[in-house]
Image (cartoon, rainbow, N blue to C red; front, side, top):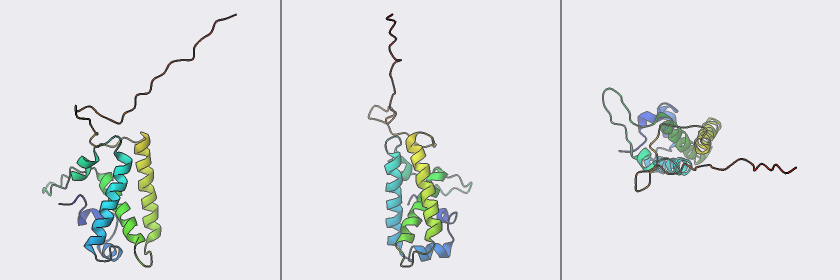
Length: 147
């Protein structure tokens, strides 16, 4: 099962519009989704376990509980749609796709800078310790009391 489902796209685009943008090709859609996931992973990889993030799939339970991070799902759809729209001959709906793409990238840059902290699995080393959290250290400027 894939990380992104047809149901996920319904939040950001209509069913008919999705068919037009994807040019009714499952291959186009799969390629755009893979590109979107890699683009997102390139921002998140230093701190987060991107393999675990994108390996999570909707469980399909009747209670509607979805273990995936909702923002990651939405931004993956937005970025995939941006790539699909860019490949259409007349660049249909490109303005809204570009706007949503830029918003997704801005959010990813905020996560990368540490200004936004999403609820995502952290990347760990072989000992299970979190990686990607640089320690900042230093000291105060040396005081010189020479009169």
